[in-house]
Amino acid sequence: MTRSESGGQPERIVVLATVGAPPRARRGRRRAPAAEGGGESAEPVPSVRATVIRAAPFESRDDADGWLERLRRERADLDEEARAGARELNALLRTHRAAVADPYVRDVAPAGATVVRVGHGTGQQVSDGRFESALELPPPAPRSRPRRRADALAPDERVAAVLGRRESVLACEELVLRARADIEADRPREAALQARIALEAALAELGGDGRLADDLSTVEDRRADVGRAANEALGGEVSAELQHAVAAAVERMETALRRRRIQR
Image (cartoon, rainbow, N blue to C red; front, side, top):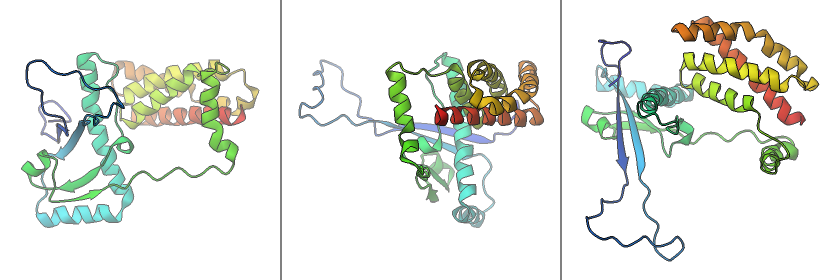
């Protein structure tokens, strides 16, 4: 159960369940599993079902149906409901990651789920992952097809070049991705701190590439604001103005890295 402040009213209830798990084996000697390809059927793979429930109920069934119908008409609002649920789940995962000190507990995104549903039902229903009525999000739209065949092959070529040690992955590439993940997960303090080191790494690693001079100039223009945001993050919350500055800086760094990949 989540609250926005200590002692406040509950806002969300997050229910986690494992579905499709094989029954627990009885005690005693067990046969070793057959090797893959030996003719035995594959073991069932369990899945985790996460349900994010609003604590405040609808006034009536008509209100609930009206809300769902609005989401049916407005795809952007439906997508935002899914993202809001992912942010709540990622807040829980962040807490778990810190509590167990496990860096491999990762964030999730709607695009990575087997299925995403948004709906309403009774308390017992939704706590069991069921609904009176629900919408299922369609799979993510495929990215627009590159105009040139060379652009479509570029990611595969980059992977091959890195694995063949002809190229290397820059530190700033990974740091910018982490900053983007923090922004998407609504972690402004972490985003500001991550963006600061990502910006310094980008300027150091990309500074010798004259083709990126204009992009890096724009990135450097954000340096002071990102530094202020990181300093605020060390002391507490980051202001909305500086959160926007951090997001803009990360976007500029993403543009510079994208241009570098195209021009290499």
